[in-house]
Image 1 (cartoon, rainbow, N blue to C red):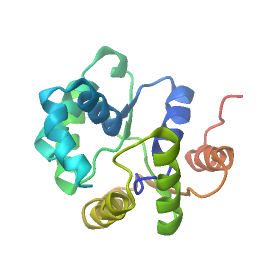
Image 2 (image 1 turned 180 degrees about the vertical axis):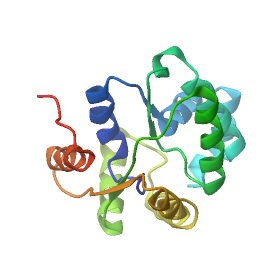
Image 3 (image 1 turned 60 degrees about the vertical axis):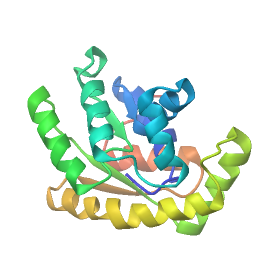
Image 4 (image 1 turned 135 degrees about the horizontal axis):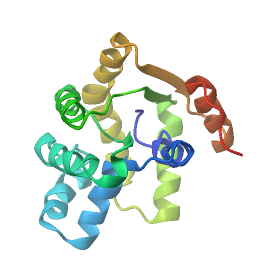
Length: 186
């Protein structure tokens, strides 16, 4: 977890590689659907372009299908899901059905202005049309309104692991593995 631009996707790849599990990114799946022009992509694009979250119904269906795939049988890492309290409840049902369990909920903590700067740089280097300053700031507001309450839910469950997400990628990765109390692969 963490606001857009906190480095979740970058760190998710390192963590997933370490544990030999798939990193399931809702953002990547949405962008793939948008570029392919699927009905889901067309619908998701409207929300993404406005900096809003894609509705739970669409997101839940997509995640449910993905965690039921064979490569996720021994575990998975979710990047960008859940984002709302309703999605937490939906995820609880999904993992109860599949027999999985949550081991930890990692939250990258970053400065808001630093995140805006990062995302504007990413927009230039990756050509991400959804990363305009207005959209970035709106996504920050949406995160605070809808996602930050999840931090309390997972803190109450004893699953929350907060890590400083600022600094060099390798430094953040080391902090994550230290906080998860695992030895990263060399």
